[in-house]
Length: 402
Ligand code: AMP
Image 1 (cartoon, rainbow, N blue to C red):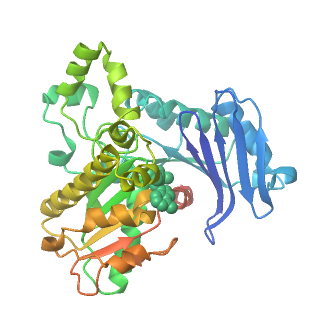
Image 2 (cartoon, rainbow, N blue to C red):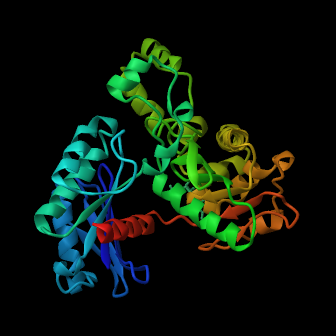
């Protein structure tokens, strides 16, 4: 089955065309700067790499261009006709409290997605616009919504609720939803498969998705029981530009002292904080690390705050699950940054976590790799994430069932 996977951000649209029979990526592309000057599409297939620069007002125009490029030999398109697309899988931000897993898009489900726009005002309109474009341009081709929050719907209430008056949860659905669900699902399933194949315990895993956005998840018996992001992706560990956990009273103080509105403070905590705000250097951990190595105190502090808080979440989740069998590291930092992995993992020996310094330094890219010493009770696995593949697999399964 040929599945087109669409991942729409507020001003971007990433896509892959995947043949699910052999899980081969036929085309990989992305559109940037939608609705902003300089919009462009890049597309890569076995025929080469191509770039189109064209003003694109919105996601509907962007989707029309994408479809044109998939079928155009001049841009490396591999389809003779769009009718070769069997199904479309959409990364959708929010289940709200309505869905527990991926769903076939129907008129009824689309109305529920629209109702949930307030839970993701930046992403949900883009997700919905893409779904509507697909329904128009490819009528009869099934669309499946695969949610970023779905993997976390198994969290028990004691982990998912905020301790605010209960009526406001009922009225406004204010609770912890968690994000990066497709990534945590993918790497935790890969870890379970790996550990089981070696006859090792696999029921208590902490998955750390560490990238520009970062989140940590406790996975017990294959199910999420807690995760670090909350009602929005702001909660949890410090990130590229997000503060992570913070005392909510800081919001009022910033409004009073700096004359900011609450919306401006939300923007400040999401876009100007984290690595960028603390270091004053960059949101990219590589740039911050390079400065820290030159002796820049604020750059070192930004990284130390990050690794310290990831370590605290790992300890907290071991306590929540009553033990720990495996730590998984994934995302741009988790897969690639040996110095940050070292700072996170060292000092957890009391939990049975013993990292092998040489394996950490020499960790190869693109495959599952153990960082632990042979004697370490807890396995430490680097697992490359693949969110698009999860979306393609879920889409195939839902369409086959339907
Ligand atoms: P992501 O959001 O998953 O793309 O991850 C972005 C983060 O990963 C940034 O902080 C990058 O500095 C970091 N990163 C990506 N590639 C590398 C690499 N090869 N070595 C070290 N850090 C990397």
